[in-house]
Length: 133
Image 1 (tube, rainbow, N blue to C red):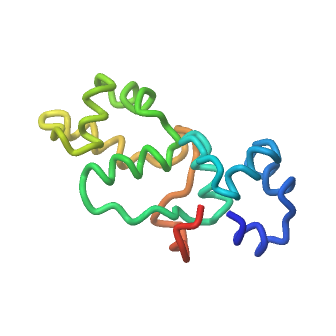
Image 2 (tube, rainbow, N blue to C red):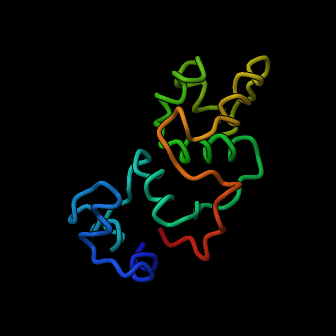
């Protein structure tokens, strides 16, 4: 995030305000002392102008990427899909295949950021030059 902040010519307090967090929280993220929770990922992706995670190639990776894009906990994502939290977690870890619930899961995977928590659509986001979050 430091590189993006520098490109934008922002001080840490301004970057923090843009992300909706305290300056202290932003400082901890920028210096890699803490990692942001998933609920902040949509704002971070918007700030960066991209999703810095590798492009998903497998179904479990697609599930995790969509959950990050939407800023959802596994608990909230499982509620939206209508399955048990442990079932959703197993799908995301690749331990189970959704089987007859695949169509329900595909609707979740196709959901745009509107109507959920926000975030950057991978199709519209430029590739990140590095994984530096």
